[in-house]
Length: 293
Image (cartoon, rainbow, N blue to C red):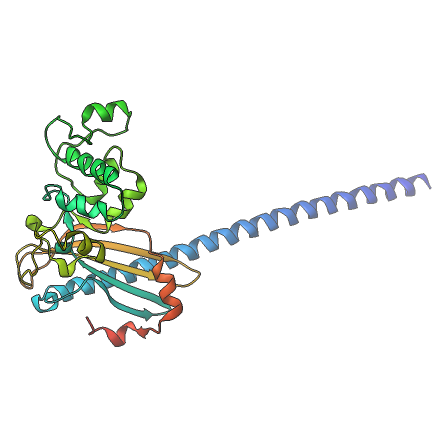
């Protein structure tokens, strides 16, 4: 009897061990499947992002190909030039002529001040204008509301004053004393690629037109084939509840039918108006509208 009892206890202990082992294996399996699910989801997201980037790049290339012809540049207005769908993706292409923007390197300050006064008080506008000009010029004498090297040192900024031309509009982030929201409000209406600083009001935004229409220093027309014609092309590609991407390219067309010079190629935040457009517009397949530019 004692032997049977001991054998029974050993069987019970073995059964408990087996159950514990099975529980551990089940737990490991659940963790593995959960982790694997995350890897699969990550891989799927990477594939979707790669697809959106490929479509956006193709949209940019197509637009630059079309712009190589001077006829395509004649009378071209800024704004949305195409919206369509391809394989479930929504595609939006925007075009901006840099001649419709204020050049940070060419403007002596009056155009920039007029632009700032459309959104800010006079003291705020004067301060921003002077700080931008001090950042650009090569001297160490601050303007009445500006900032020079000593001011940058006092604010312990991680970068110093440039004392040189702006390389990109994103250099505005490095101007001491400019609030981030002011920088964001300027980016759409300023450039470093307006050759000669000549303004073309019919290519400008409503804000720039408001600021400069009465200054008398804005040209009205620029020949389509002019040397150094520069455009910004933006491609926004998205799929609802999935991946999205926005590419921004600045390209210069030097001669007729020549390959453009690419000055900048960046990603940027997809604008909010895209989602609103999805709800209120019908879209043709991109292949069906490829000739519409």
